[in-house]
Image (cartoon, rainbow, N blue to C red; front, side):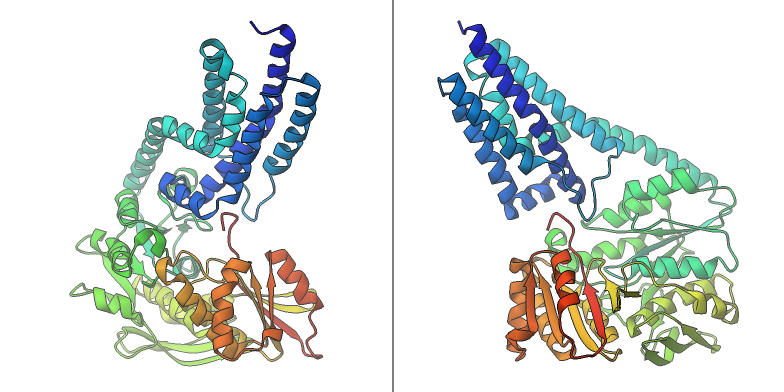
Length: 522
């Protein structure tokens, strides 16, 4: 039998583990949320980012060994050090995209805590000798305890999601006779087209769109349940995908009558596996349209052209053969002027404060859909002129004396090249701040090297973020003959921006392109 003193010491040890354990659960749930609540994706992330797991494992191992120390005074001192270390490691930090305490997160945290309590209870009753090791083990394996809790909750989560999804479907069915639903997907450009199109359609229709980047099934369901009203005549629904079947799942919820495919490219290759699977997934939207539905596609996109086959579609873009063709494009650092010719031969001049040739392709797509829905192009002229840039997508601001081109949202090869074209329009000392591109599978290093070569042609200075991420970009810069003196590698985006303010620009105005800002799980 253990003495009261030893039992009291064990309970003190356990109580000192509980708070860091809860904090560790919160930390892991944050990354699990960033990884879209996908266990396989999260496990792959853990494999690529072992330090956090290894630190937890190390502290847990020390805590377990501490239980073997016979001297209570020494054990208490060691436990105090372990407790402080665990609190430092696990205390929740404010991230770039903070943890959102959704009902699902609260349920997951509750289950993880209850599971831990059950383990401790069983050890206390059945495995007395292992009781003092159990808290340390739970702490060391907090990531897997969280995944076990998710597995336990899975039937409940599926039931809740099914209930909310069915509710959203009923709301959409009740509005089917009076409202058109437009689905928008693409490897890139879909959020911009969504905002442009919604602004244009509001010239005639009461329009609802999925806000921000709400492009997952539950994001769409939340929008429908919370915002859809009888007055709405058009629902513009952004559709995102990381896995084959994701777009079909969304189409089965909203049943779009009009579809827009903005682009197909090497985005999220880690989950898709190949570009061909990306094509199949994006065209799930086309396959879901009714017989009398309308499909709009980017006519300049080679990947779309190679896959569209015999499907009937309205093409938009800048190349010959597009049904809605943008021409006479004149881009400056003040905005863009262009004209659009419709299938019936009507030609309309437009001006916009938006920057970049690729923006005009997206905008032409929005004009095409709005025009096909009965709004004359002449009536769209004022709406196009008033359009604002979409947040973090080539958003132009002046900040503390810097001209800042904020293109921080989810960079990709085409978008990065287009962003460099935009900064090249400006006079001044051109600086790029970037961690490079991610989620490009086996091509990631190759595409980032190419990105480095493209940077060398445009920018006077390159501020790269993250030692590991920067390596292939530096190789590309070096291959293009870019001087090492013009490269600085920062550990964080905050450190990078601080450096930009101190950087000498030889009296020229600093123009800064912020290209991508990786979330906390990178």
